[in-house]
Image (cartoon, rainbow, N blue to C red; front, side):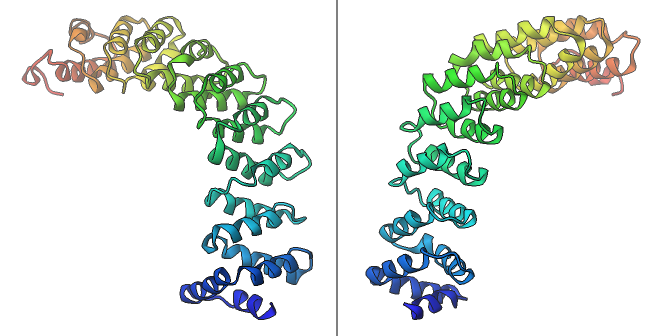
Length: 322
């Protein structure tokens, strides 16, 4: 037993590691005795031996890897426990998930340990453990960072219950959770979330609003785009500027028509950004309004209007110097 531990500790090259792993996999009973011995102590030597074994876990047979992780997840040293959970996440071990649920429920456990449990549950059986992940995300008494990790894991569970949970988070009292929920919904692009995203456009957090705008913008859905266009027409000038910059890359008739309507704004900054946007995403129906802006008192408005006219086919570049 000591000889094998010394061999494990002395690995310095890939060839040596391959040799040791081949021996271990060929002698599972002997290695099982080593695991039983090493994972029953907390001395510095035992901790080092645990770390050396964990260095090999990706190369062990599935049966031996599970045997190691079984001992790791109940180890008293959080560092060891976290290393084992990271390995379980990498090699997608799911047989220990019921035990991991108990670890997740222990609020006295360190955040990093519980975080890896969340991601193991989400990556190995997101549907089966969706209810637990949703409960974690909604729990206002839970560590907000763990709640955010649960939200991340829920992006792999695009069912009605998850969408309902994420929409509910847009009304959470904690701004970080609203931001996290908006980010998740923007990444999932589910048409079922359009109404709650539109409502969140009134959130006080710019981060929430930005993720909501991106989410609606990226949906291939006329209702989402029309909702954005309607909101853009009635919000403040500063918000219109921000929205134009975020939606312009979505070259849709609905969005470009809404931006064109803002070319009649009384706010100079809105005019500048709207004209710039049409220059970036040409829109021939905007040509008549852009021509009127060639006489505007603001030089930047005039310059952006010229570029937009050229890109939209409304004027010959020989008529003036850009």
